[in-house]
Length: 126
Image (cartoon, rainbow, N blue to C red):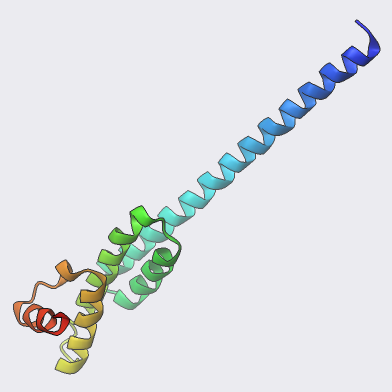
């Protein structure tokens, strides 16, 4: 085999190796990003379960803004649940509770389980 044949074969192997490394690097990067999103969502759920609705809302809202369309509905539902959870504070006025319920209703109408609020919000949305 001639020298030029060996050089072109070596160049092809190098190109394949570079493409493989780029692909593997891209795959690893995407996996790290996916893991970070899952970790952030788990953290939001921990805050939600602890009744720390403001912290959970902040995390869920950030996730919702960058989420793929398949995840947006689920995240909107969690945002709504945080708003509903905030209404459990007995020191809130009815007006403030209603404002929070409106936000929840806008995110996910099925999150409203209080019949009085649901009736009012459904009437407002007509």
